Length: 268
Image 1 (cartoon, rainbow, N blue to C red):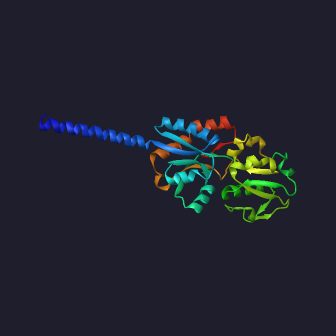
Image 2: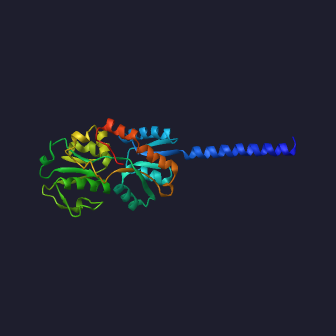
Image 3: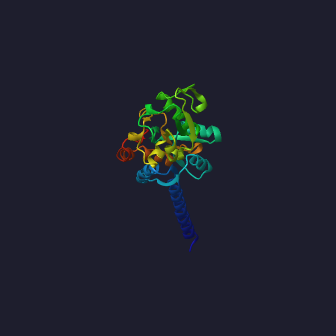
C-alpha cells in the first residue's frame, strides 16, 4: 500500500470513528432518567414517554413511593429530572438541604382535598374533631390553608408558606391536628374525623377527589401546580426542553381529561 493510499485509509477510518463518536454522543444526549411518584403520576409519565419518543427522546422512568426521595436522587445525579412537586415543596427542600434544583416547566395540578369516613359534610365536624394533615412543611401549610379557607380555623399569617398548627390563631371547634406522613394518612383515615390528603395518595386509596372530597382547593389559579425539576446547571439542555414539550402536549392533556375526569388537571 502506497503512502498516499495509507493516508487516505487513515483519514477515512478517522472520519468513520468520529462519526460514530458523534452519533453515540447524540444518542446519549437524547436519553434521560425521569423520577416520578408511582401510581397515577407514573401513568401520566408513560404517556409523556410515548410523546417524547416521537420527538427523538428516550425517557427512562424511575418510580418512588415517597415524596422525600426524588429530589435527593436528582441532586445526587441518579436522575436527569423529576416531576412530582410544587414550588412551596421545592422551596422547603432547598431551605432544608441546599439543593441546587430549579423548575423548568409545569405539568399537572392536583387540588388537595379534605376527606372523612365519619362525617357527610365539612360542617358536620364536631367539637374536638381529630384532623390529619401532612407532616412536611409545605403540604402541612397547604392543608391548614384549605381548612382556613373553609372557616374551620384562622391563621396568623394566611400567606405563610410553612404554616404549622402553631400558627393557628383561632380554632372555635378546638379541633386537634395529627401531623402524619402524607403517604400514610389514608391508612389512618378510619381513626380520624377527617384528613387533608394529597390527590396522588387519595386516588391510590380509591378515593375520588371530585366526588369524595368534602372540600377542595380551587381548581383554577391554583398556586400548587407541579413541574419538572432539574439540576440548575442542566436547565438549558435541549433534551430537557423536549421533555417539557412532551408533558405539555395535547396527548397528555387529552389523557388527563379521559382518565381522571377532573381529579388531575393540566397546570400549563
